[in-house]
Image (cartoon, rainbow, N blue to C red; front, side, top):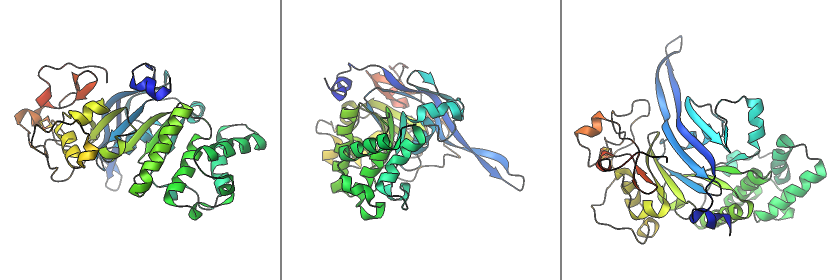
Length: 345
Ligand code: SF4
C-alpha cells in the first residue's frame, strides 16, 4: 500500500513532527536605548502533530503567522516558548552544531522561486549546493544524485547548464523542489510554493509534489493563504488567525462542515467547486469584513471577535480553547465549547 493511502486510511500512525504550545514573539523596540515596549505575537501557543507521510495544510490570511510558524519549526527562527519534537527528538533548544544533523531531513520550498534561487549559479550548481553543504559525497556521487532528482522533477539533463532566468515560473519552482529534495529529506515545509504561479501551472506543480511525496515517502507542512490551494494536497488542515489556531480538522470534515466562523468565511470566499461538493449550506454566507488586527495588539478574548458576526459578551472576556467537537475535528470558538472536550490535536 502506498504511504499516502496508508495515511488516508489511518494505518500510518507514527508522528514525524509534534509542536507543543509553540510561541514566537518578536520584541517591539523603541526610544534611543531601544527598550522593549511590547511584542508582536506572530505564533501564539500553537500545538499540532503531523504523521509520517501526511500533508498538513496551514491556511490563513497574510499576517496570520503561518510562514513564521514554518520557519520556527525548521529552527530558521528561534522560538520564544514551547516544544518542537522531530522524529521523536526534542530539537527546540539544541545547539546549531547538533541541529546540523537534522537539517538534511528538514527542508523548505519558498514561495518565489526567482528570488530564492541565486541568479549567478546554474541549475547544476544550485542543486549540488545542498549536497556540498550537507554531505561528504565526492563529486561523481553528487553528480549522480543531481541528475536523478532533476529527472524526477520533470526537467532535462540539458537544463543543468542553464541559469534560473532562462526558465518559466513553473520550471523555476521545479528547480527549487529538486534543490530541497536532492538529499532525501523526510520533512518539507512548503511555504506557498504555488502562490506566485499562473493558475494553469499551479495544478501541475501540486501534482508533481504529490507524486514525489508518494515516491519518496515525504511529509509536508503545506502553507497557503486560501483553502482552494490546499484542498487536493492536504490530509488535514489547520486554519490560523492572528498567530493562533482557529480550527484543525481532516480535510473532508473541514470542507463539508466547517465550524469556526473564520473558516466559514474563508470557504465562502472561494468558488463552489473549491469549497467541496458535499458541503452543507444550511447557514448564512459570511463575508469577511475589515482587516486583521495587529498581532502587536490583539483583541482580548477571541482574536477573531472584531470581525465575527456572531461575537457575544464571552468572546471579549475569555480566549476560546481548542476543543474536539467531532473525532479529530477541533475548533476554538465559544459557540462550540458547551459539550466538547479538550484533546490532543
Ligand atoms: Fe466569533 Fe465568539 Fe466564536 Fe470568536 S469565540 S469566533 S468571536 S463566536
